[in-house]
Length: 401
Image 1 (cartoon, rainbow, N blue to C red):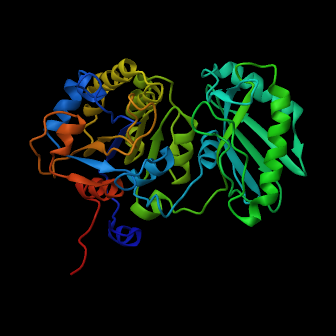
Image 2: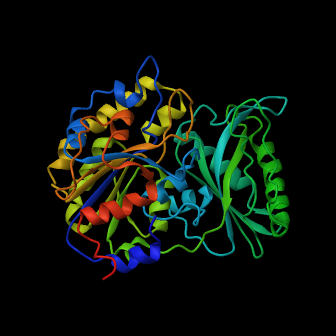
Image 3: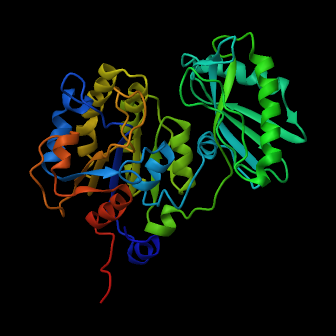
């Protein structure tokens, strides 16, 4: 892994264009003998792999299961162990919140709790976004201030929302209240540092009131908080890599992460076809595109093998539209694996395809985990993907004399 400082010193501005296509959670495990990628019919992705150099990338380190934040930061060239960014910050930025030093934010889930206080559904059946809006409005009307801190509640998609507290002296170093699996009660908002004790008590008071407001609104009769955090200082991709980057994504968290590293967020529709159309419409204005596909991850978390396969195949059908733009570099990968078999993120490395006129084509002929593992790049860390993309786009000068 080369340091950020060295990469910054080597990058140059050029007209060449890079497209990073991320199928969130695309990696899988075999069910009935095949992973989701192996089961999918992907002639265009396979053709791309056959004219590229391939490998598999560990998002953080071998054996470490990453969240979406670390998974994406690595791909963007940021050490995920150096820059720990809370999910709450990413969600807040993704819906357009302007955060300041006095803000503590959290990503919230509406959830279902039984009469014994046990979580039976962490996502409240993925309630419709319209119901989410209704419940957020109800909470906001009922709770505007807690212990001197201003409270703001903004809806996201389906079961997700953003919660913000604003007051002097707040500290975001607080454990999640989400137990991460059903069959357990919510965790208390425990402080991770003495300075965060007051904020933890404040959040505990808020949760008590929120449960009272929601008690008759089954299945969304409670909330779980994740990624309680404050905004960090992080250099932009323009500063580090001399790129003019853009993000095409449908979910707020990924827009938030992209905004945090200085990408412009492009307006797009909700479908995969819409995202590729957005890429085409804005192609002349940027030199780096992050195109994010969410549903591969969503269906993996739901344990829905067949629907995850269907999303992969839908992406494959859009690849010709990407190729028609003739980017100088195309990279296809995932931020982490989400096998339907596990119904969650896993530690397995992600398949990675790098297509450029200046790469040594290997013998890989399929975009699958096993095939890419035999590629010329072997197994490497995701933080090295950015230098590889920059080099393939001829955006890196020689190091040393």
